[in-house]
Image 1 (cartoon, rainbow, N blue to C red):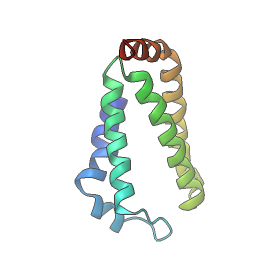
Image 2 (cartoon, rainbow, N blue to C red):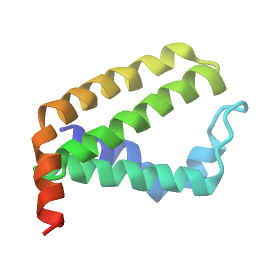
Image 3 (cartoon, one colour):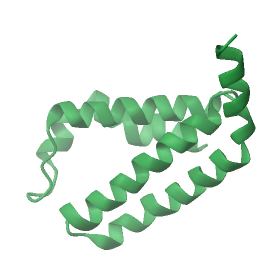
Length: 114
């Protein structure tokens, strides 16, 4: 479910209609178009990775970092600290997923080093 959320609701709009998102952003939150597209690609890739069992731990770790940065952006740049709570909750969930599936990271590393 979280994978689909990041593909459809979070990363998808950044890739499909990035200009609309930058035009509707608050005045104090200006994100360059290239960075917005990069974030969208990272979110879609993370969402897909969450749905692939061998990649789920790495995807969850990456999305955990991404959501912590999103919370910081909301709190300090957009000056809306309460909007940072949801990304922090997601970061905790992703950190837990990465921890619980940490064995898949070792398995992936071993299969790539052969």
